[in-house]
Length: 163
Image 1 (cartoon, rainbow, N blue to C red):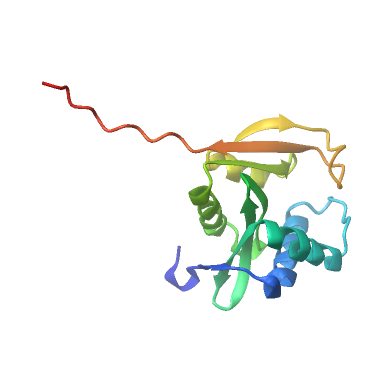
Image 2 (tube, rainbow, N blue to C red):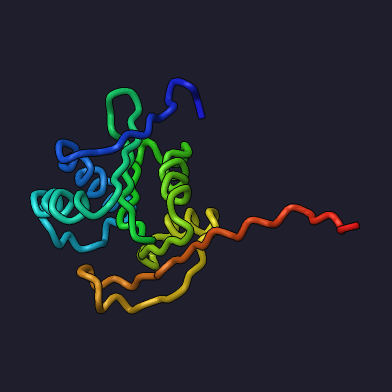
């Protein structure tokens, strides 16, 4: 990654929730324009503020003074991971995902089946599809897929034979 664009990972607080929710909206609808818009921007900000903030670790990737990516995770789940379209493909999503993988031994997450870019991203990072649904249980009614990642056990150092 170019040194001028090296992102800084920062912990986000209540004052960042409007921007975090906005990153989600822009990134999601740029990638999946057919997806139903089931919440207003204000409702999404409230979700980040009232549900994610108290229950998750929320990190942001900042380039200069601009927040360009966000991740919310905890309890073996990634709840949100989005990078602004103009900053995708630069390793920012991988950096944010690496933060979560560094803190959890097992991770699950949902993504939409038609989101091929996200699916390829997670599969490159060692996630496996565990379950597919018809989408009847999600708000968008869009078929989705549950991904799972588990940290591999550390190999024991070679044992020396006893004398």
